[in-house]
Image (cartoon, rainbow, N blue to C red; front, side):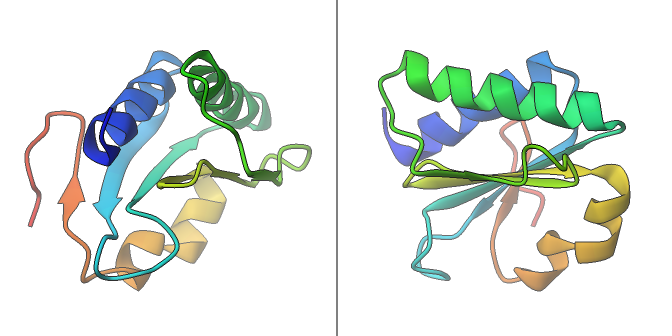
Length: 118
């Protein structure tokens, strides 16, 4: 599975838990951190944790190591480092505040409909 297929697979896992406003930023050539950022949010602490758990389980089912998982207990901004993909699962309020999509505004943005937004 290449990085593009991988991020879409993880986005679908998030979507299964009703994650909202799921976007994928293609970071290759823009940042050395990852090939893609997966960004989404939930509307409650429990939903944020459920989305993060679904992404983690999806990775483990494919034999991918979770390098780091941060913020799970607080459920405001959960960061899941999966190597080529870094998933950011926000609580809605935190997502509005940090606006990662604007911070990385040079990155091509994709949704689950598989169409570039820019």
